Image 1 (tube, rainbow, N blue to C red):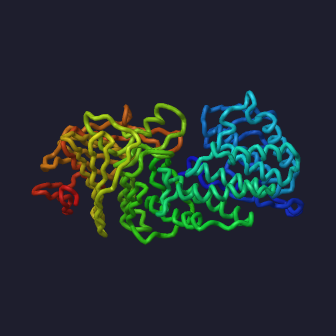
Image 2 (cartoon, helix red, strand yellow):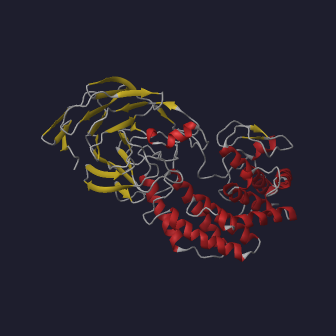
Length: 543
């Protein structure tokens, strides 16, 4: 079973045997008994002085902690280390076991952190007081404050609250903003500061309206973050109620609408389609219900479609368009993915990490996605694209998307036929320009043959065929297949990099690409404006 590369829905980790007599001595608090703790490390790990964060090898803390440590030169590790959530596991273990050793070590760690990480002090790393570590760190410190009534802790939480309430540091319309509001409300309610709690409530409503649109689509351009946002909104609403506040309807309704978006962006194999900063290993692990429609176009820039719900062998596809790249998005507009017959067929380049490396920047680029390029024209980043035409049928759907990311119109039409699984894609450009496209296949597929405008790949007995035609129905030959090199890579999980076959077309005035899963010898014909694939016919313009 594939595992989640970076935890999204944080789960409570409680280790060891709990003695009822011991546990009854300690009051369990709402601040500690929540879902904010990571699955690793456990309280036992922390007590032994070894912590494993974001899936990287365990790091030896030692008795005296080096707060400037960055053993893997990894930003995610640094942020999680500075969040102190791993310290919070000790307080939770104390509440559940009654054993003072856990609370004493937690207090020792937190007090040492406060002493060595003063805000604005020389020697304090800048990232320690970035918005996300501040908001995430507030929860374990709040948890600790239920059992430690000392001024250094209360003063530190007040410093956190002042930063959380600073409009210049607020990440409006983003999951970080939601975490900032959760933290600020928690501190405000804990210490009776109505001004902090009021500000958090007011800001949260505005941020949710920007981050989740009226259709329920997450606007951060990576569907897997919808799971995180949904979970955090559940926490926010619970905390508002416990603070004696009414949950605004805009928050509850959009949180509910997120469930449909998560369902639509989850493939038949149970994993979310890895678009934007999204791992191919992300399982929602939440109850979404079954949407009424098999196909849904979201104004935020997604088309998701499938043959049927509840069937692992169902075909599934995604198409990208919409606002220009931002937040967790990639330059994947007009890109498609395709899943059929229980297999990944066309895949995205994936998400490697947030490290500022040349490979990370490549994963963001058009070259890491199944997109058309206009030959001889320069790509213009962050260009928006539009869905201009669509046709919905039970067994077949067609969509047309277009933009001017190369200065002239770039248009892609996509047809997906169900039953007899076929995907057909027509690419053209304006101004007499030629187009070239790329097709990244799942890493398990190996090249079997390439010639005459037909490329066959296979994984054991399973085969998939790509055929390319011109608008005049002639075969277009000269495809290049690259595995590794500059283009042939995919990152299905955090910090992974695997070779995958990428088919690069020749340049042409128009390219009609036909993908036929399950065979190495499909019957493909084209004449009189009609294409026939394995007995399935459709117009050559796909509408």
